[in-house]
Length: 167
Image (cartoon, rainbow, N blue to C red; front, top):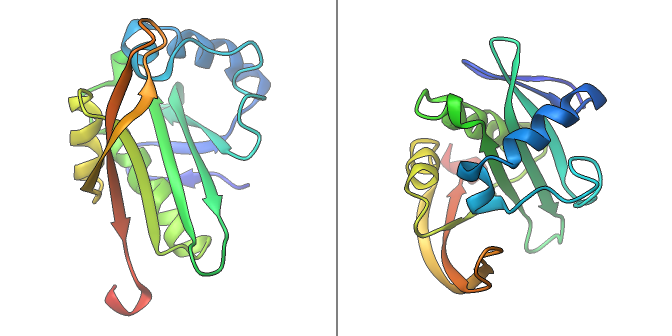
């Protein structure tokens, strides 16, 4: 897959040299709260159906975005997930990365519907996704387990829909 260029970020396939930095970012409390600690084979092996891209900001590894695609002809959609290093929060980089990924999925990969699940308590992510054109469409009860406590937490289902004749 080729690089994707946003207004402030570049998204490119994960390289071996990115592994240590991405693992360290994923292990920060701000990211691990929502993603859990990295698996032993992260970032290369825990979700083979996902396409993962390194987020670069000013040439520095700033985080990761991933997407997966459901290609059922009558029910197609793509799902996006992202994390950024805490030092890059609040700068619009996450919004740019989500917008850039969304544009790729809509324009280059032929999707019309994109979804994101986000914990109801993750205000930073909710704001980011809304700025990237996603809207809350439902509440998924007991959708994800908190790795620290074992308790089930709720998520908002968010989506962005762009039918070709509505663009």
